[in-house]
Length: 426
Ligand code: ATP
Ligand code: MG
Image 1 (cartoon, rainbow, N blue to C red):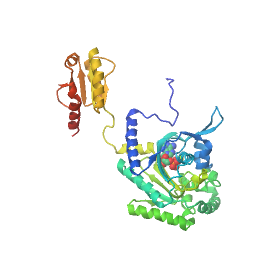
Image 2 (tube, rainbow, N blue to C red):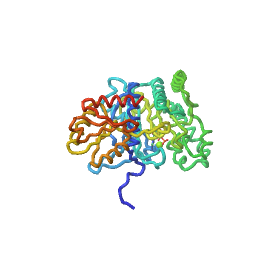
Image 3 (tube, rainbow, N blue to C red):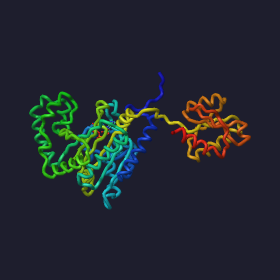
Image 4 (cartoon, rainbow, N blue to C red):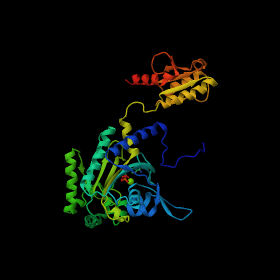
């Protein structure tokens, strides 16, 4: 057995083949976000622990058992690796007075940390793309968020992602439902699993969300929050549904959709696929009108969503065909000291001309170099030997087509290569 060190369990290295797909995804996502007028914000990965306790809620799974919290050994501060992005985003907006001028449409993209049991689609370090719209009260922004998601699935070519929505009403409405819910579950206490018993008096709403098959019947028949919604909540929910219908986005109202974070109210939604097994929720979000006030700001409405990048990419890659690996435009081989000096110059000229070049390093025979050129996936090799140095020209050799090599004058090389690549693309 070797004793080389391994990454922390549940935290993944993303190796080049995959990392290239990530970069492609990220650039697509940034373009998509810009097209809706959302602007980037970057916050620290570490925050004061009380931020998450206050924002997410003390009796949520995340705060109770999933946070990487530690005491700063140097100054005794309680710190936590962020488990989600909304709390940090709101903190930053308040700290920098960003709501003073105008409402804000923001997005972030980055690592999150949760101490969960690692499995497919569930990791201890994972990534989210998150969107927050702060200072907007109406159902219009809720629907903007849902339509944005739909467009991204379309742009990525994802199929079979379905939308579930629900309304969590106001805190008063949830309190009145909660009382009825506790009474109902108490009456059936013998049927509750350990998790549900633990949550009965702290967070009974979460019991509705139980994944335990033995609990499904009980949860299905439980009193519904929708029966406790007042006029304002119903009107907001109706507004959301009307706009969704106008836009032709299919959805299902799932009365048991509750979300795991305490800050949500009114609209909540999830996008779900059947193709990823148990970890099928690729995106989740909703309205959190109370959070800004809860974190010490002047109360203002807000809504947002976050998607799991690992899950999305797993789904995206299922749809992709062909080789995703990166290949340079040109592999540059050379032989001899003078040729090496010329090769460095030629490589930079090609790059200035917008081409990607893998410059051979490490010496070796021409034959060995051509093997590497072949393996690189480049469509073209540029070869420089003594003769070429003398004539200030190079040999251009197509690697993927049955065409012979030919001499090209150094000054004409960028144009020749660009033309070749353009034609080969057809
Ligand atoms: P789940 O029910 O799967 O635990 P959640 O409700 O805890 O999800 P959110 O906090 O709403 O998730 O995060 C939004 C999205 O981030 C999820 O829909 C999922 O795609 C992704 N996500 C959450 N936790 C993880 C994780 N541990 N590993 C990978 N992706 C995750
Ligand atoms: Mg979770």
